[in-house]
Length: 336
Image (cartoon, rainbow, N blue to C red; front, top):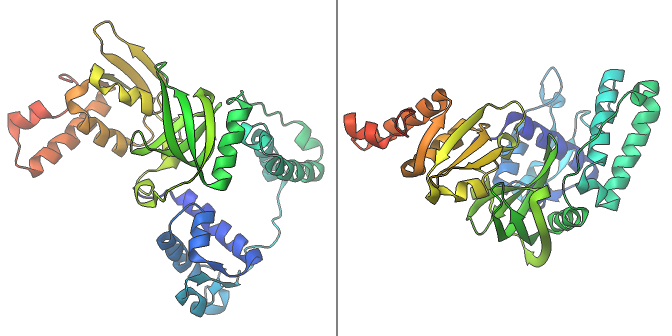
């Protein structure tokens, strides 16, 4: 799945800022620091190499030492002012104050003294510089999980260690899992752990306030870059304004409610269950519902059902299944 442009832009800017202070860094180390693959770092360097300041002549471009690249080391030789101090207007400074206050209130920051000190320092400097405007900003976040759990997760992320967690799903099912943590993310009033789940054999997200217990192991996390590259965590966490869909499943698809972030789960008298979720990634929803076709009873709104049905028919047509047979197999709003 394609990477979101804003995620890549942040990484590109971060790479320049990091290399400007760190000096030459092996490609593998840079990939680990930015949570991506060595191949992606090579692509990022290629993109930065043709980026720069207006004019875009050779002397205006960000530059690297070509000989170092050939040895698998990234050595920034010209940042083209990308690391100059940033001048902020009052509106930008107030927005940053709000973001830092929200960050300060998260469990991930409160559980890590070093991280908390960095946020506190930046917040203090911005508040002093912004003056009275900053006093009008009031940010409050709801609790996002047990502080001890958040501390263990933060430690495992920093050390790149596997976690054992006990998790209660939105349908009140408690399970024990081993996961390789990828990152913590706060969306709306909740914090989420993105991870590779060994029980599911796939990437999963876990709402932190539903993690009952977390234990950091001494097992290093594995490299799941190939599988994780196909998952758009940014879209998965987009939540908020994304449209809602309601899906009714047969009992054998219960794992869906336990392992996919959903807004709500409703158990029905006949054993079926109904989930409501945010459609942040229509492509993922299409492919998932096609795979679960025999267990999908209904999909609403109708546009979502029609989208899935159309994709299913196209897939079946590739194998020569057309007409009534395709209609029977595809997910449709009136049949499933």
